Length: 82
Image (cartoon, rainbow, N blue to C red; front, side, top):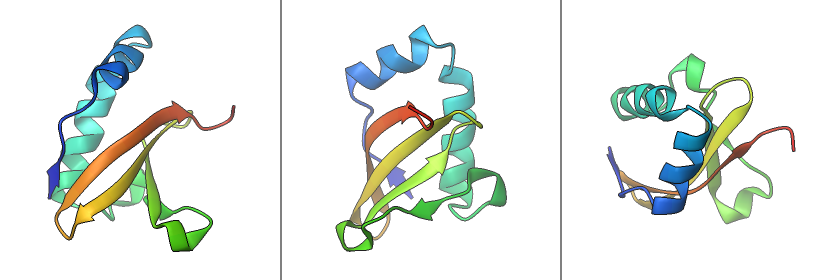
């Protein structure tokens, strides 16, 4: 699995919230096993858009799209409850 380079605004978002270490850990886990239970990877609704997410922690989610079978692009990182 390959992840496209992270946009600068996401790096800033993670840094301001002290989440870079968690992000790097979860990304490494995702690359190794995208279906690992702690990631809670899921297809979001509406399913026809094929937008997925995985858990950064209980509060934050990483939203992504598959660009190819083994390549993803992160399109958002957000507070899951806002």
